[in-house]
Image (cartoon, rainbow, N blue to C red; front, side, top):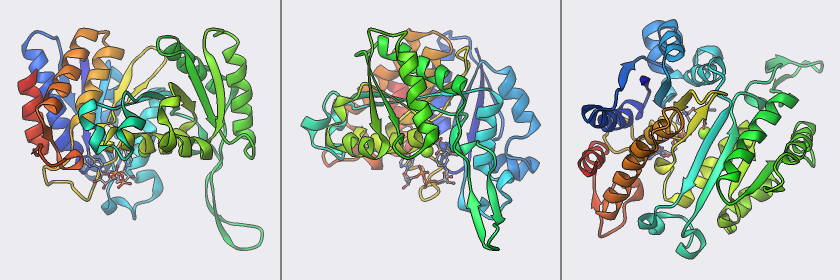
Length: 354
Ligand SMILES: NC(=O)C1=CN([C@@H]2O[C@H](COP(=O)(O)OP(=O)(O)OC[C@H]3O[C@@H](n4cnc5c(N)ncnc54)[C@H](O)[C@@H]3O)[C@@H](O)[C@H]2O)C=CC1
Ligand SMILES: CC(C)CC(=O)C(=O)O
Ligand SMILES: [Mg+2]
């Protein structure tokens, strides 16, 4: 089981260190893990002048799976766009064909009080957001900033999806829904954007192969509202890259914190990159304050999706449940009566629970 470890920037190294401790514990018990580290994002730019350098490309391509922290930081904002950390992240996703981004928003009952919604609205919450990850306005050409015909500067990006890109992500969503409650809500803005009107048409066509799955459609503005009004109406949400990016951050707060949301980004053969949904959190970086659970839960997703080790995945998830039941909380999910722990303190607790 070859795993590339890419700590990244900001809180990335702190949270990844805790997930690596969890993996090392499983390795010591006999799981055949090989962990190798390389830089991505700003750290890679600092060392190699490229946010996705060759050394990282080689390691990532040869690995079965990748564990990533997060990239980015204000110190890189002035760089040419192609040198910025976030571009390194987009490049690795594209390079490895990681088109299917699974972002489960699950409420642990112990965190009902940390959710932004009332306990009765979120209790039992279990939504799977399936976000297309290698297309849409994040990749569409042309893009840039230029002087237009009127002699004025303007910025532009292009939202585009090919039929095959929509079909393959729709199939992922329907396949997942078949193993869950059997409901897919496709989120678009088909009332004004041709690209997403096309999305809706293709998803509707793919649904014909899944008669047991109930398909609904929702405009993204309404979906953003429904997520905080009545989130349990959703089972699987399938949507494009930008809408999925935004809606998953929103959904994270239903679970108590952005620090609780893991993700898997899969190619067609379940090779995957696993990372928390949040960014590099420059405001708390280097302070040992970050919540490492999203990253630890991402390692569990890795064992489940890439390595087919449901047993090991569930062990990690059970350990996370145990530490929450015992009352350990990082600052972002802290409530009075609980025991506040640091990032590494949470890592200690999870390793002990394992
Ligand atoms: N996948 C990635 O690598 C991503 C990178 N970014 C980059 O990260 C940098 C910061 O972006 P922001 O918009 O501030 O988003 P962010 O997700 O890094 O932070 C937003 C807020 O959530 C908090 N937060 C995030 N993760 C946390 C954790 N594990 N525990 C406790 N609190 C946590 C932060 O302290 C901050 O207050 C930017 O450079 C951005 O481009 C943003 C999103 C994803
Ligand atoms: C570079 C961004 C697209 C990262 C991000 O916000 C995400 O993937 O959630
Ligand atoms: Mg995001």
